[in-house]
Length: 254
Image (cartoon, rainbow, N blue to C red):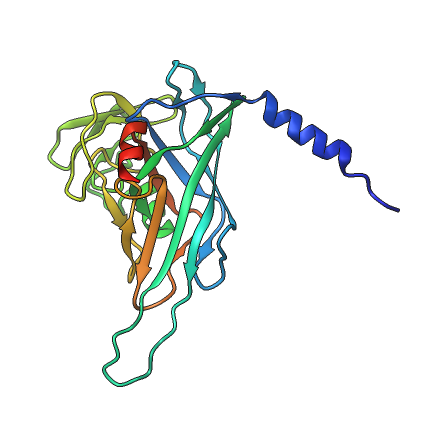
């Protein structure tokens, strides 16, 4: 029996049309988790990239987008690693580049102009969610990616030096972003940070790969990994902290 897909297509088109196009203010962060893995040895340009937010995100008009909102993008380039067996050969780099396109959730559709403030592999994310295995701290304190301390019995989030750098509320961790080496600047508004510290910046885990593009300079919303040892991968359940950049900055960077 032939299936008629026209009604379904019309429904999907209508759903997209009814989603209100909104925007995010510069400096807004989106803590996200990747829904599936992306492997430079298997991916192709144009493949869909799927992730979701892990905390509430505030739009420029003050409305909130619930955790679990969809972040979609696509693969820009994927070059598999090929080992050169020639003696003393310099290995050619393998590259993986993706672009973040949109945020969709709570009835809104938001085109993204962001840079990747921090990226962590699943092992690092898992370590950040579990208390340290020690009898010295019976309170179940966990360590954010980058070193901040979160204790379930208190709202304050402390840096490794004991300074208050954020707070726990609305089911997550929020902080004023701190500047850090690697090009991450400070912020003056409270933002969701997910599993990351207020000063988290750059690549965590991903042994053997380098973060060669974040979207802060060059093409906005673009994440690029490079390796001369293997094909770069972004595993499912990896986490990233995206930060919205001003449109004027994005245009100037092109």
